[in-house]
Image 1 (spheres, helix red, strand yellow):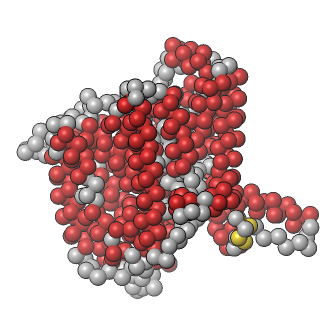
Image 2 (cartoon, one colour):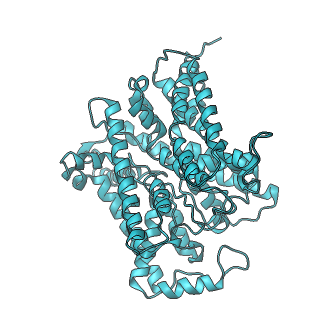
Image 3 (cartoon, one colour):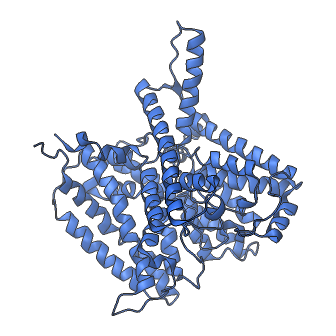
Length: 535
């Protein structure tokens, strides 16, 4: 019998190290609870459980040896573990701690463990899909809502990348961990030590978050947007840079002024940019960003999608002709927005740019209910869900660099077909891309698309099982939005809707899709191969 090649105890010990320190960010919503006079029980209990569980796992292997195989397992288990631990505050808010503490909001939809797990995984993977029935402070405390926002900020740059930056025991082997977790084909080593690279990435991430919070709150201070309180500024700063999309407002960014929407757009663009480029800018090499071919292709893709959507909205053909009998909007809402946007340059450009950037970068915010858009406009957004941000960004989906390499390799194939004697390598930023890397990009993209169609079929079968009537567009968008960590889809799962209508089995299936999408498929599939586990 073959012995296990993977040191499971070492992997779980490192998971414990990460979980133990998850108690630190839990202190922020605890402080918010004290400020607003809310109960701190959900966070105190979670902190105690997290530390106890983390220390217990650490003791499995006091001196773990981190290799590539242990790194894959550690990253995969960490993301599952933080989702379980992160759901505890939601469950305590709904159920209390019998018989010591009474429930705070027993009517919460997160009383269902499947819903709580879905919401937490959606948070940490920065998906932004929600199962909250009522997004308001009447149904949830401010501290719980801030924890919901904070899960996205922690997951944005990566929990394991943060751990590599601050935990000495992960500095050796940290490169494998960051490659396994970081979105995109690879992560650029910015400094001689990988821990310093992790700190540089998180430093840029934190700086941009604080800048956005400052600008958003300034709108309230000067009277431009009174709705953008300090709480809302912090809440949206925590979910823009991770391309998360959660909002404590039921109407998302529609609840705020046009000025606030224009401020958020460039931060969403920044969130979808390779964060290594910001490090180069801060160190005096701003030309690196200007010359970067992926960045230019990324901006070009955003501009094309924005221009098409803006033209459709401006021309008046971008809206449905009538509101549905049962839906997320009514005839009055449709009439209001169609009359404000059609034929008007600034609104057409703003709504188009906001939604195009939000969907391409997989942020998932909405400044209007795009269920009101016509079928061609909606299918364009569905296509945009597959584009994704840059490698090394917080965005999800396939990633712009993969599409760029695929297009360049197709162009190369057409050229060499016409000129069989020619040798023409595929280049990215002046560097030749290894043929093995190109095959890997094709393999990932094919796997992504196959998984998308298979998952859509399984969700369709589950919806039939429970009698949930969904259109093809709703099913496809729900799959694309969870696998690509986008968030909102169309119809019942639209930007002003939720995933609450799905069965518990369907929601747990999408829980797995979000997990697979965040880890970019390959690390998960590697764990399923017998060769990974055997000598």
